[in-house]
Structures are given as structure tokens and as C-alpha cells.
Image (cartoon, rainbow, N blue to C red; front, top):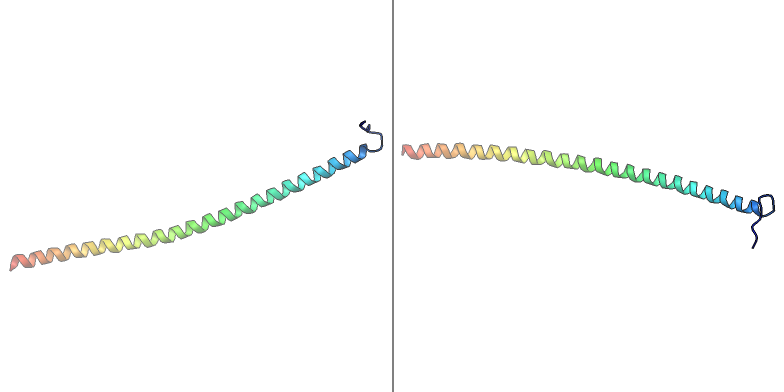
Length: 89
């Protein structure tokens, strides 16, 4: 089958097909870019939310540690007092 030359009828069909294909590729590229931006935004949101939750949990753990330290210190003082009382008896 012979290829039509540029100035012959039918050569415009190929050019039109190529232009249509180029438009479809551009639309796909824009759509892909938009989807990647949305995924990036979602991942940032989730990361910030998880960081916030982690900070809250870390604060609670720190509070528990402080209370445990106070409790250990109180028990140590109580044991010292009890030891002093036992020595007096």
C-alpha cells in the first residue's frame, strides 16, 4: 500500500490522528499530575495527624513516668522512715 504524500488527500488524516493522540497524552499527563498532587496532600495530612497523635501519646507516657518517679521516691522515703522506727524499737 502506498503512503500518501503530504499534499495528497489522506495525509491530513494521519496528522489529525497525531494531534488527537497528542491531546490525549497531554490530558493523561495533567490527570496523572493532579492525582499525584492529591496523593501527596493526603500523605502529608496523614503524616501530620499521626505525628500529632504520637506527640499526645508521648506526653502521656512522660506524665506516667513522672508519676512513677514520684511514687518510687515516696516509697523510698517511707522505707527509710520505717527503718528508723524499727531501729528505735
